[in-house]
Length: 353
Ligand code: NAD
Image (cartoon, rainbow, N blue to C red; front, top):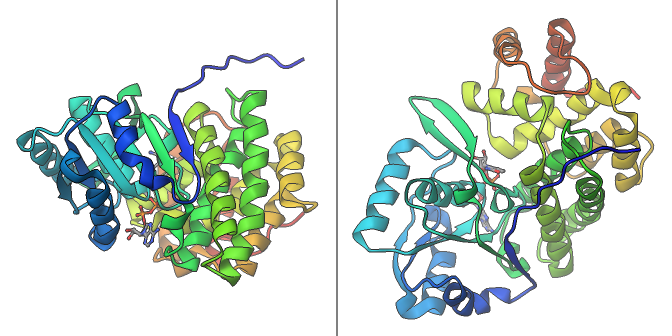
């Protein structure tokens, strides 16, 4: 019999194409009247759309969200929020923009209304990250969990197909590791399996036709489920490795997840057979590591770290950094095997079954 502890995190979720039109009433339901709208420079037009829907409820736009939340950006955004007397942060964008909202909330307790436009899943987690002097520190704090999340597939129609595929694989990584999490539970495993299945259906359709609204909706549904898993249970080897590669070697987030995941799953396969069976079932394949690899490759994603900016000569250092802190993982993390995992991810070889 399973033994588990399950603590649910609470967020209000509105799902559906066109649901952005309800943002004003959602903000009012939060008791907020002065929103600071956050975005990246590229997503300014979407932020302007939010401003036009909010009218006087929008007091400003901060359009300088940067990947991994540099502390200087966080400080500037916090200052702008204070100067404008904002009582709520509206984050429209991917994990980068939601991350900036979290940095503001961590400092001020402002509620976040998140409108995700990628599949990264940050909107469903109380996990924040801030980068100071080149080192990204992450933590959990209930203040940073968005209070309301609006999933509107129309807003992801413009997300380029290539980013959509790697972002979707980033989401699958949350669900896959949630399946074998030390603190996992049956509810999260159900969500994880459903989330992986939705993304495995959606990504090939989006690659074929980026404007396919039904596929976009399916992918966002998968992202919601996978993000929920990430928020509720601890991650293992795969996420720690990606954190090391991203933080210490400046590799791009979703692409790194895509290249590493098949090999992290292969590493853990024998130690987590039930999880592997469920991941494979969700993907509609026999082998979870191969299924993830094939999903990425067939949809045009880079499956080799060598194409993402790391040098082969960096792999020893990456291995040493990843070995420094031990953490729960189905299979003990051993140096030689980990170095081989990194080599396989670097070369982009298809995992053995
Ligand atoms: P991102 O937010 O950096 O977005 C990638 C690019 O796509 C950006 O230029 C963005 O402006 C653009 N973009 C996003 N949506 C678009 C759309 N619909 N149309 C056109 N362009 C669009 O990428 P991401 O992968 O979502 O986020 C990565 C960051 O999120 C990393 O820093 C990662 O650490 C963090 N993250 C945090 C958590 C958490 O729980 N704290 C979870 C996942 C990711």
